Amino acid sequence: MPQQPDSHAVKEYLLGLQEQICQRLAVVDGKGSFETDAWDRPEGGGGISRVITDGGVFEKGGVNFSHVMGETMPASATAHRPHLAGAPWQAMGVSLVMHPLNPYVPTSHANVRFFVATPENAEPVYWFGGGYDLTPYYGFDEDCVHWHRVAKAACDPFGERLYREYKQWCDNYFYLKHRDEPRGVGGLFFDDHNTGDFGRDFGLMQSVGDSFIEAYEPIVQCRKGIPWGDQERDFQLYRRGRYVEFNLVYDRGTLFGLQSGGRTESILMSLPPLVRWEYSYVPEAGSEEARLTDYFLTGRDWLETTDE
Image (cartoon, rainbow, N blue to C red):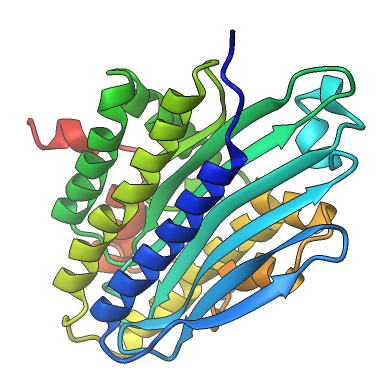
C-alpha cells in the first residue's frame, strides 16, 4: 500500500534548507545580509522571502519559501493531470536565484518543491520536483565539471541513470527556443516524481536540495575576486536579458505562481536588478564573449569532457 505523504515533514525540511542556504551565502558575500519578508496569501497559505541586495558579491538574490493552497487546481498544474481538475491542493517549495555583481561569478537558480492534491473520494496524489542550473557569463571548464559532479553525486543513490535523465531534462527545459540556445550550462531538472515510496521520493528531493550549496559555494569563492571592467559588465547585462526572456516566456514556476494568485513580488524576485538588450549584437570572433555561446552553451556532457 502506498505511503501517505507527510506534508509536515516536507515543510520542516524546506524551512531548514532556506535557512542553511541563506547563512552560507551570506558568509560568502561578506557584506550583505538576507532581509526577511513574511507574507500571507488571501486565498490560503503564505511564505517567507529572504532577499539580499547590493552585497559584496551578490547584486541581488533571493531564497524564497512558500506554502500555498487552494480549492481548485490551477490550469498550469492540470494540463498534464486532467483527472485532478477541481481537486483541493497544496504546494510548497524553496526557490532561489542569485545574481552576482562580478561577471565572472555565474548566476545560479535552484528549486525543490512538493505538490499534493486530494481528489474527492480518493487518496492524495503527490509529486516532487526540483533541480538547479548554472548560467555563466564567462565560463570555466572546471566550474562546469564541479557543478555536474555534485549533481551526479546527489542523484546516484537513487538510481545510476537518474543524473543522465535529469541532466538531459534540464538541457531541454532551460532552452530558449526563440534564440535557439541554452540558458546556461545545465544541471538537474525533474518533475512529477512519485514512485509510490514517499520516503525514497522525499529523500531524492532532500539530496538535490542539500547539494545545491555544495555545488555553488566553491565556484563563487573561486571567482568573486577576479577583476572586471566595463566590457565584462556590459556583456553580463546583455546576457541577463536571456534570463529575463526565459523566465517570462517559458518558466513553469512563474506561470503557476501567477495563475495561482501567488505573491507577484516573490514570483518576479528571480529577475535581475539591471539588464540591457542590444539590437543584433554579435561578439567579436574568438573573444571570451563569443566563447560563451560557441563552447559553453552547447549542451555538452561535462563529465565526459573530463575523461577525454
